[in-house]
Length: 327
Image 1 (cartoon, one colour):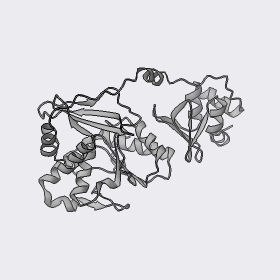
Image 2 (cartoon, helix red, strand yellow):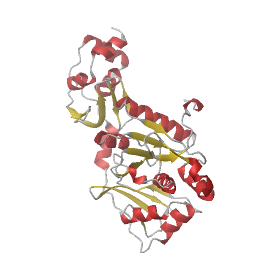
Image 3 (cartoon, one colour):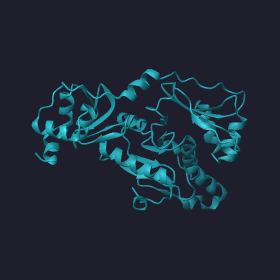
Image 4 (cartoon, helix red, strand yellow):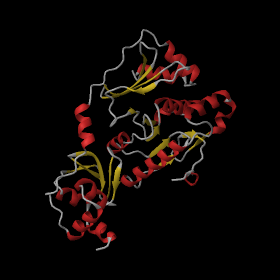
C-alpha cells in the first residue's frame, strides 16, 4: 500500500482509540484525555502536539505515540494491525515537569511606582495611560528591587509573571518560577483578533501605536510568548476561542522571522481556514524600537499606520517576507 493510500485509509481518531487513548471533542477539533496539548483536525486528518511542537499526518501521529520506527509504523498501518498492546508513548519530560510545577509566588511590591513609570514611559516610550491601565488591573507593579513585574490572570488567579529590570545600564529580565506556559501572558479584552508578540513590552508598544493613531487597542486580545519558541499557550487559547484574525508581530530579526513562519504553519495545520497576518515593524528590530522611532518623529505616525482588512489600524509592514528567509 502506498503512503498516500495509508494516509487516506487511516484516521488519526481511529488510530488514537486503537492505541488506547480517550478521544475528546473540543469545538470542531479533538484532543486526547491523556495528552491534552494534542489537537486533531478530522477534516484534513492532521494533528499537532503543542507541548512538544510535533505534528503532521496519521503516520507521524502513530510513530509519535507508539514509539515505532517509520518502517514498522507503515507496516502496521497498511495491515490494519494496530492494537492497544503498544503502550502509548510517554512524554517523560512533560510528566516530570508536571511533578516539578511550583506555585507562582509574586515578588514583594515596592511602596511606589516611580521606576516603572520612568522606565516604561520615558525610556521605552510606552503610552502613560496604557501603563496606568496595566497598573489599575494589577497586571503591572514595581517590586522592592525596582523591577517591572508583569502579571497575567485567569479568573483573578495569577497564571504567569515576568520581571524586567528598570536599570538601563544593566539588562535584567526573566519569567518568574511557577509561571504557566500553557497560559503565557494573556490579555483578554474580549477582542475579535489576537495579537501575538514576543514580549509584554512589545505588546504594550503595539497598543501604544494603535492609541497614537486614535484607534481602540482593546479591540484585540494580546498574548506575549516570552521568547519565540513557547507556542503551546497560543494553541490553548485558540482552542477556547475563534478569532477573526491572528496578527503575528514578532521581532524583525532572523529568529523572529523564522519563528513567525513556523507559528503560522503550525496554526494552519490545525486551523487551515484561520486568517493570519505576519507583521513586521517598518523600522527597528522590534515594535518597541519602532515605537521609539515614531515618538521621535511624530509627523510620520499617521503615514506609518494603515487600516488592515479587519478595520484595525496597524503599522505599515512588509507583508511577504518569506522569500527573504533561508528556511
